[in-house]
Image (cartoon, rainbow, N blue to C red):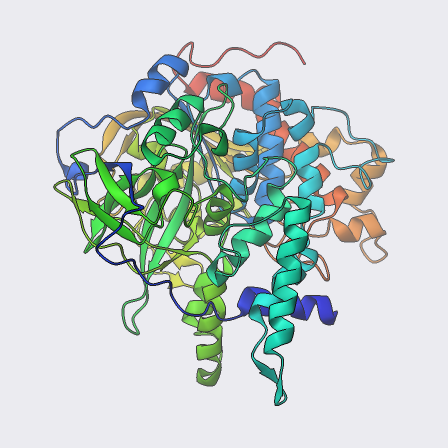
Length: 591
């Protein structure tokens, strides 16, 4: 990324997050009650049943035992997720899905999908033959348009005033900084685009992503608290005193969304402790206890509060008042998609003298206070702890589905590398000694080791036959996992769907597009062939020159089309239907 705009964006994302917000005193007249749910730390190894807070509502609205997981991968995964949602919709399967889980870039598409109130065909686009004339200029759907216009430069510039120092080259610019901040606030009010905690620097990344992926699609998704649906918004309103209309709610016909994040807890100079976090419209929190952190779900509007006090066996008092420190959908997608954060915190790839500045840079990414309740008594709210990318721990977004013992699962792996070299996939079958800026791969095993070879062999067989990279199987055993507090169970039916440019798909392309994907002259590439040089394994960052996460219309449209095909082609559709329990998903009508 070059030029002044690029430098300012880097400065914006990387500036120091400044002083922590101090907790309130023990007296809290503005505090209000919030619902909480304790989770037993021994659930993973015990026998007692656990009803999730959403179970009762889902048992009425979404009876099919189906979960769909969308992996991480920046705008590459967001583009693929758009296509996969489009394909599921075309098959008539979305209305049957009980749970949708996502991390990182997958959440950048899954959150707008869940909370968008317009026509899904407008948001996702529809299955249409690709057109060489329009594929480079016209993003297929409103969400694809957001990916195409996801450059962080213009939104980053708005955040720059908050990060200016007191002086530059000995010249005091304090008053200039204050004037710029005041002018920015006035402009936002005129445009009705105020953001919460505007000067809180660890909200910077959330403000930026919220403008890109939520503004214009999800009214107030970057500003107001959110709920699962209207019924839960009313319940939250009764407790908090905040009007129901101020909560962003999902339409009634959407699956229950769970977005994965990772709480990053520094432990001296050791590698940080990485703690899985779940964000939902009904609750947010950490399932397992890690010292004074975790073991508790809390209503999402109340997450990140700095004061807690006992209330009853189902509610705690939180403060400040209901309008203070709002937790928003922008915070969710920023935490889940904060991939650079851990690398900056570690700083182990740069000289020692640069590590301090890099760690200060990481503080522009999300940091929230965490709530822990033990025996219905809350402990003190934690300091603001870094909340990073869901891919630091569970990059395939599988764990929340296993927590809830879902028996029919489709995992969409939207990776930047071929399936036989993906350590993220392998980590679910065996612990890997990989602990770096991409996360910890040692704590994920939930399937038998032999299953990994089975999956790779299955994907190889499918691709050798010219089809997509899909492998489905029935009757798997899920192993208990203490870190994620998953209890083992039997009878899992699972399909792994990998982003792979199958021969059958390429053969269906218009001739011009086919030559862009497989150029006949490798030495003299067209502009389009150069854009698709890494297809479908675009880099998570910097795929295009002068673009941090931005992809071009051709790149987005083609990847979304491949992703939709991966679930709608007859071979994949038949494999999924065979693997799942009878009657769980309908047989698609002819498209």
